[in-house]
Image (tube, rainbow, N blue to C red; front, side, top):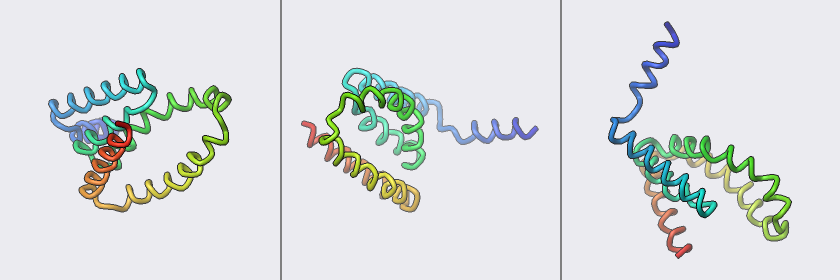
Length: 128
């Protein structure tokens, strides 16, 4: 009986079908983008999912999708990388990841949605 209740609770938390279809479509589009150019899926996926779910749920969902593929590529990428060029990025990741996780866990979701949107816009401007 407990399993049935858990499934019932999960289904009750899902968004409406059109919203769920939008989320699935955006995740598919982000996956196609990452497949073609190797990055950028998060620029599409996170803002849309953060509008549907909370920002922390959106980031968690994206990490669940992203980490397995990234870990698979890591050994080859590490061997082929320029260690001197990669080191500053690794330092930024080591500092920024715990800070970002802390902010994600403690800040109100609405300002986080605005912050995520502004960060995506800034990244798009820098990439263009």
